[in-house]
Image (cartoon, rainbow, N blue to C red; front, side, top):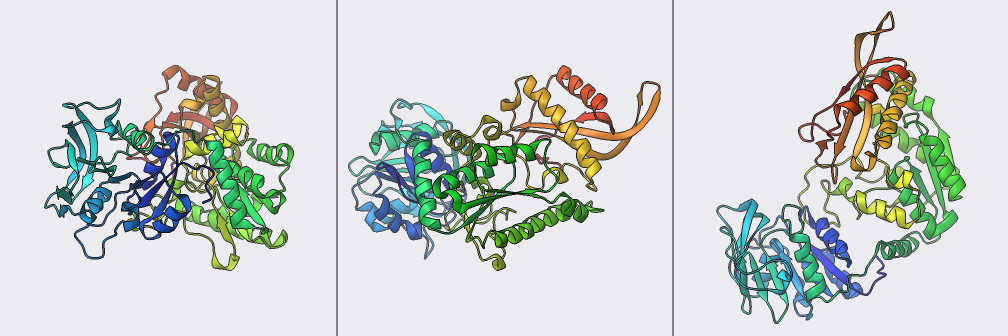
Length: 519
């Protein structure tokens, strides 16, 4: 990445599943950061000339032959270094200390006791206090390197925090980057601000400028085709890329008939009217609905929609003269469980449907300018780009759209019924001033019919389920606790105004054990 700020922190990735959270905490402290895998970090170091280095955790053991090491130049550079978990252990090993494989590790919540003062604790922790931290390690330091002192301990980690004041080297056995270490963000902020001397004045505006420069370098004079879904991620990616390369970008809005009410019109008016971005609006509702006819299996629905989406794209790319690049609004949560963020040695947890690139036959490279960001950061970038709040603040919407909110067969009639119910639900949420307090809210049309009575008539119609959750990253979610009067009001409106629904239920299941979406 091209750097737009002279004060940067290099994060060396040893394969931790939460390395990206370190970058997030550094950015929250107003300092720019980049992640580089340990085996490619020297190039990033030379280019960035960082004010400090943070070494991530990782799944390896320093006691094993061939385990990752810190480039020696980093330890000789006379700049501050903070080692976290494996980072502490590898730094200790290379500087002359001892690390041993533990018969039993330390995992989960622990309480750290502060034994000596340290610049990392400025305005935060005092000698004699105990504070919660989060541990996740098997090996442990048993002898610190020459020049270090112990400033904090836990029952399972007598070297929980070690410091070499002269060299400005710091090692933590716990993970300050995760939310389970409540003061962790402030510890990292103290490192980058007080130890490294960074001013903390980096902004999303600078990230925008850096990304624009990077996109220009990657694309050159090539053509880019970008898929719009109606969601915030693709909208922000498209506007950012357009700022970088102008009319070299063509946006394709695949209108598959599975969008929310009025969404297609909003997308077209924003991009064609407001931004004047070349936009191809493809009305392929019939193609998608015909392909979904008779299909009730959720995985088969997803796969059909994903494949057909790519097929439509491929055809459109040829029409615009053969695009060289395909832009996607991929975010970090899309890849965090699939691959190491930058190609480091992390253990794969599971594959993800958004990660894996393109069919080889398409012969296009990916442009993914949001790949380093979380959802809240994307929204901040969207505001920086001037996107209207209706796009920036929009709840997440799945790629397969309404198809996975209609368990069972998907038809146009059922889509239309669900669109109306969903619109009423979201309207009432907005009217109550609750939209921004909720991570995601939506209606589901169930494959269930029940008996009802309307006037003097017996009805036998569909059941509508309502879902609303709070979350920070979508990985876990709690049910939003609507009061009964709100749910009663929504239920009454849906039954009265939506032909085909005569009963409404509310989903009280958290994630886990449930998922946010129904399919």
